[in-house]
Length: 213
Ligand SMILES: Nc1ccccc1C(=O)C[C@H](N)C(=O)O
Ligand SMILES: [Zn+2]
Ligand SMILES: [Zn+2]
Image 1 (cartoon, rainbow, N blue to C red):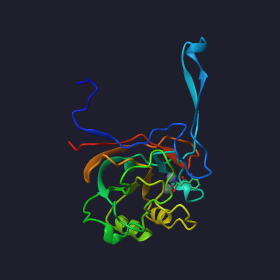
Image 2: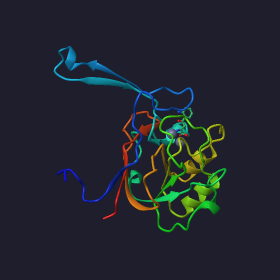
Image 3: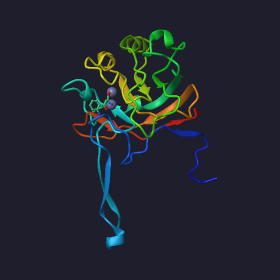
């Protein structure tokens, strides 16, 4: 076993950032190019990336849905590390309503799996959003962070952003673009630290789940 191998199982729940990464319609595609090349005599290889702040697996900053609110560099770290509950919402139709939730007690973070199979290679606009009432209810249960394998907690065509505004009202935090195909329902340790981007409306994350000790 590698000396680096953790004794507790780890699930990588992050998308791979790559040039053919599906992105929100009209948004910046992920780009990567070499700026220094060893095969051209440089002592090192160095690259340059261009991307949307919402590329792949990321944490929205409140600034994304509230002008003047916290940016990705100002958000507290605590919501993104700690125990979480993974809920399997596959088969729910329309949006995730309160009635679709299992009994949730003492969960600070809830991650929703909605895809049968995560659409790694195509943009799917038919994801399962989360009803604002569900977010309100989860907030009243003490939930501080909501995660989803969908690109947004709201529907793609939303102009009112009801789910995001329910998150704002309760000062909750959001993870989007998680990959939960290999994760069973249950409790895990979540680590998903947003990049500290000054002025950022979101921060890309390398998100993982770890078996609880
Ligand atoms: N890239 C975009 C461009 C325009 C409007 C929305 C997006 C999004 O990515 C949605 C975002 N992930 C959200 O937090 O709902
Ligand atoms: Zn987002
Ligand atoms: Zn969002």
